[in-house]
Image (cartoon, rainbow, N blue to C red):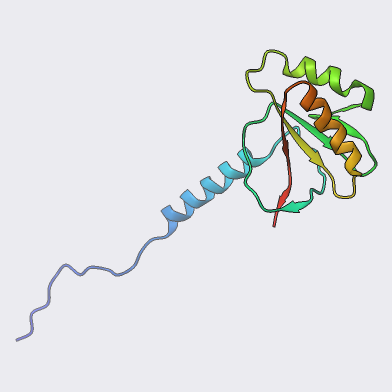
Length: 128
């Protein structure tokens, strides 16, 4: 005589709850990774780690336009605008985003301004 149990365990797994969680995480990361004051420039590649500490972002485009955060500035106004934006900061930090092909003199000029004012400069690059 063969006895069969009434309670059979189903080997199936419902993926609907897992799919909901993954979808919500995807939306969260898409919303938080979008930086509203970043310009679309092609950064040089390098190995290194990035940081989230940022007070001011300076971007230099290929056509030598200079932006502090999202506003365009002339080369002679950079130091005054940096002093105004970083006044009162405990550890003033500048993220320097120089597009590929920008002459090194332009980046060195920004680093010189930061050195005179004792600002920390971080050079932004694309990961390899």
